Image 1 (cartoon, chains in turn brown, yellow):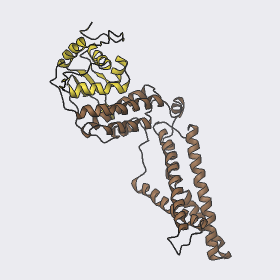
Image 2 (spheres, chains in turn cyan, red):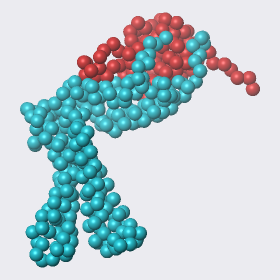
Image 3 (cartoon, rainbow over the protein chains, first blue to last red):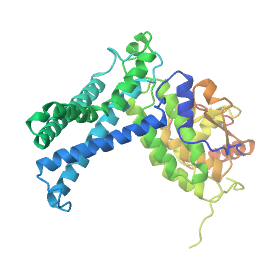
Length: 270
Length: 115
């Protein structure tokens, strides 16, 4: 009879524990109040974008149920969501480097991560410029030619708000690196993202595989799968092999689940 | 139609390989990837077999590795071994298997107690 542990551990708790233990900053997050600031900034951005697109679609604010305004809302939502996803992607790429305790961001990012960060910065800069132009024109139209300075200041404020989401998504992770500055040879020698790392998509597939199993057994198998994936990663197995492992476990989770749900036949003799 | 009640696990080739791998050194505990390497089966194949042997028939026992993951910096492994009763039953089942691993020429490490 096995002495299977019945202790339930929150999913991901071990990854966090041993990542922190080996000096990773990956799980370091901004304080909760600051994270809420991001939500406020994005909401404000969405409103500014709505104002901008309402101008383009010639929406009439006096009749809020117009198709033009609905289209403007749709466009503003789309751009907000896209920019959020793009920033989240860039931030996630950067956080992958925080696994290296001695990582330095300068000169050691792979091309894809650089492109993601650059694209995020350029995209937010474009939005900021559009905000500035749109808001400045609107304020000038309201105040007349004498309100040039005021219009510029308000436009700049709107532009700053448009560019602000780049800060928590990209700049903060970069600062987290630099606080941890040290020799960057370790990361360079390991080939940027390097070997020895668990591939997130494989880990995600294993979470799905564990979900297939009966609730009483999920924690045990989830931990076992994670352990094996970790061993594979540490032995230098690459992304594809890790994904292959995870897919196999996902497929085998169905017969495992079936067995765990079936009655025990311990007394059976061959 | 009268159903034939199964008295042991179906002795498929992968099941035989896993049993032979565990019987090679019955006192030694192996974790999943070690068993894969030992018997030459892919990772997705051995877990259904081990689960069946453990939960359905009780031939295999498992336990967590006795470490603190936070201190070791790695997750615990799950170790498997044949129970005394399971080892005996496995030997008998392997000897009775209609299609034996040895007859089809698969190369495995010799299992304890079996030629």
